Image (cartoon, rainbow, N blue to C red; front, side, top):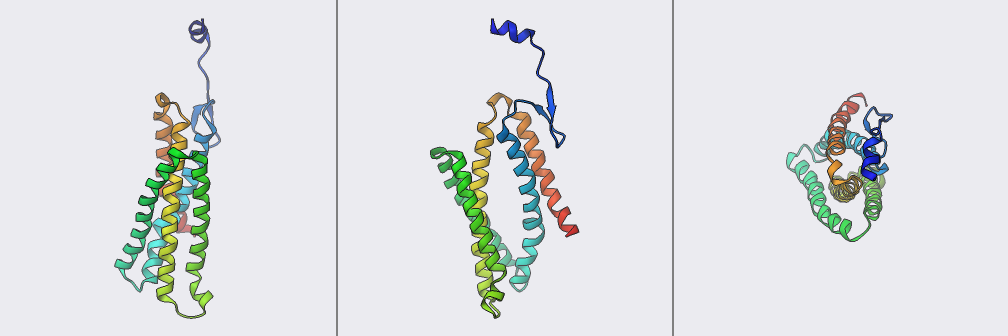
Length: 191
């Protein structure tokens, strides 16, 4: 019987990845991609959000903490609202389409950020109010992007691991998230 054969087979050997994590060799590729994105995306977010953004907003808003909070609140609010929308889409669409939509919104975020930080050069004059409004629009796109990709990625990650085997991969992903959060500001020190 299959049970007797399984009992006689030696246990599967673990395979060590290039990043030093020991995981079963039959781990779904989506899990590895989630790990990679969590680590690299978190490090980039750590440089941008935790090191550069608040200072940039503070200088841009003529040293107004209220304006910094408003701009970052716009980003957080957009993320929260779009995450709900992303969850509905992840249930009704294919999850990879949600990630593709997140990629499009991410490109819009990059474009609007580029325009926002170069608004004075584009307009050729002092455009304080336009600069601030533009960066708020860009942050709304960034929040929307985060709400979509996070929902899509977490859904694919969960779907790629059998329910009884999620503890270790989820713990590893959490540790990678913590490492990337610390890595971003450390990278910013050297930039």
